[in-house]
Length: 243
Image 1 (cartoon, helix red, strand yellow):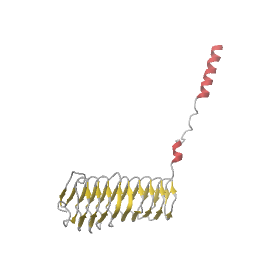
Image 2: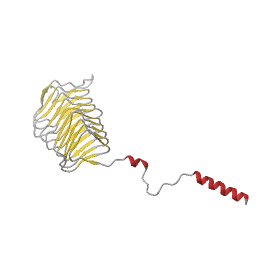
Image 3: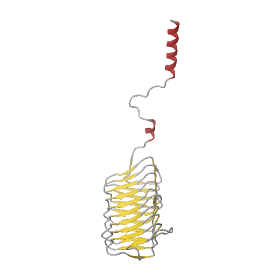
Image 4: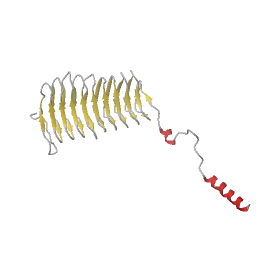
């Protein structure tokens, strides 16, 4: 009997030291830090959005000095005007009406605007790169910077403007149509490619660390002052050989 009593005592003491089991279906603690999406249908100033910001279908959102701790999603037929903003993730727009990112805005992810209307990126940066493709209005990039990725401007109606911008990787301006494509004073960390643009292409004072490749632009591009192989290797080829 003494042995049995001692064993029961040990078991009881051990039970007191065990952690309680979590309640069934309890959410992990980190879920408490996940903020809900914030819809923007008017204007926000110098405030902090704790999670993802969404511009709903057909809405217009104006951000001035706003800090977004998540990403930004611009939905169908909607407009985003962002000035001096900071976005911790990326900006994604699809079938949008207009995306305008200006005034030293910084995006830690990428800026991707596809199959929508107008796109303007001025005096702003996207650490993860820029992809501006298949839009129905002429896009404009002026002093846009991709710190850790490339820049792709392709298949946009109305041509394209890419001026004084810098890509840490490849900079590609391709298959734009229906207007003049203007590629001026840009810097590519890798290659600069200007191919298959229709409606007139002007290529002036660009620099790439590797090659400048141009082909199948109709009519043949005009321009001058372009430098391929700025880091000591690389060349100008195709339609850009003499530009």
